[in-house]
Image (cartoon, rainbow, N blue to C red; front, side, top):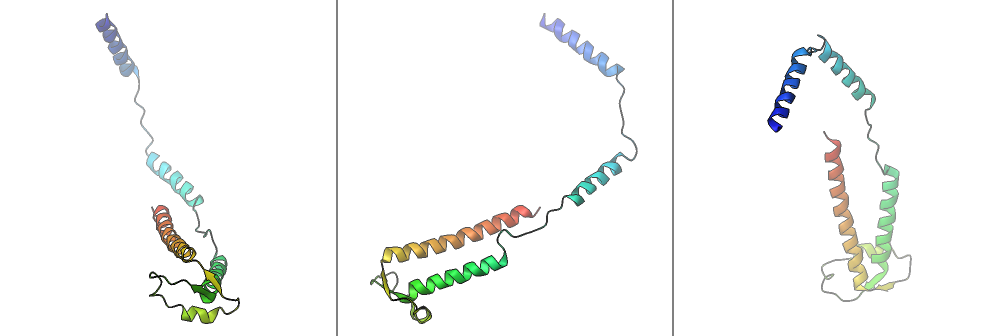
Length: 135
């Protein structure tokens, strides 16, 4: 029974293909398609506009430097073997605005770790989006 159905189906398909006409595209089909593609590409060009503008970056930099000068300039650190190689004498001359504070070493480590991770993530994201925008 299955062979008979398969045979009838094959005959039907052969009949359809024999009676159908092949359509061929016009002579300038490729040129028309390419001109439409070029028209679409030229109208939808994206222009680069940074997410954060230059004045905002400058303001953030000034705020960050001010924060560092206040924190490291006026703070007295507890004795730690991790920070013995750092010299904060230059930064301490910048920020004699507020009275000196005593910061816990864990807070200093957290701030340093946060800054390092922020720089790593910014460079990784910048490279990621630069590669994504290039075709």
